[in-house]
Image (cartoon, rainbow, N blue to C red):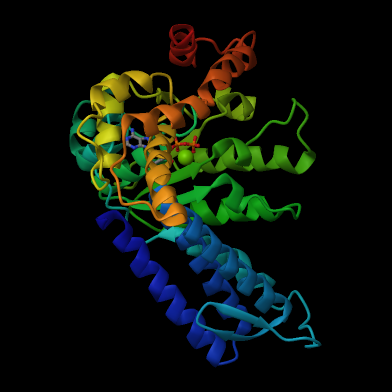
Length: 402
Ligand SMILES: Nc1ncnc2c1ncn2[C@@H]1O[C@H](COP(=O)(O)OP(=O)(O)OP(=O)(O)O)[C@@H](O)[C@H]1O
Ligand SMILES: [Mg+2]
């Protein structure tokens, strides 16, 4: 819950500002704030349980529509989240806000208040958590020790692994534990359909990071930013990758106390441009595997703690039955199992009843895990690329997955 409060506060701030700018007739600035609102809601959705997520994403979409509408002059009346587009309103010419657009947009992506998620909220992954602490938290916390022992921290860290197993959560926890500024971006957020825009965005993001003494840049869904489409990227994507490479080089702050780390996460490491994979910029790669039996038990505990579960349901047994599923899928299974008695109660007016093992069995029968196809695909994509070593743990996990 705490985790979300910071982002909620950011959202409220932007929301108030948006209304103020709107009231004052400053549509460009209002549009920027509304876009921030949308992004904060998306961040919130990322950190929220499934049932809340859809509602938050719907709201976020509305805010994006408002932002777009204000930019184009199609939205004129707005009352508390309800958009009332007015017909026949003259459109304001585009371009008037272009200058401030990039800088403002990028600033909107910086979470001034850090996430409050803790490593202990994340089930399993003990070794991974320690690796992440070593790579991310300690260099910020004990810079003088690194200096004394002549170990150069910094560089890039790539978190990779199957979807829905905690990469984004881990990055948030790492940010919360270190006292560095957290500049967080989703690949899909900065990739712009306009040629050249993405590079500008990248530049600006690094500028924002450099304005802090210590900062952690987090590129989520890295593949969609630095993606390689069947080996033939379009020209502007190439230059985006070179921009990233040179910006990462430019982060080296020799002889100063400044510290920067670049963290990236992907569930499609083979889609990250080969220049970035092999450049040595991401000298630490951390594999985030699917949950083992202990982790699955904890995920079940977390997700069932507020649900009426029959005493006959054994978490041990459920943890065994969910072998091979992603963490997010297990959370979803809990949700779906609860939906069965809930649905009966609402539609058939039956008395309330607890969630039984039969409910779980039914959900499990219908729900297949995406990992069953993800692992073979990963192995296929990575075989013959000469990067078997870099992604060795994935290959091993795939072998065990069977
Ligand atoms: N290790 C975990 N412990 C507890 N819950 C988890 C864990 N991993 C994932 N979850 C649940 O699944 C959701 C999705 O996790 P997260 O966003 O971190 O996955 P991801 O690895 O970033 O996936 P993707 O590759 O699709 O971005 C979380 O919000 C949380 O509810
Ligand atoms: Mg993620």
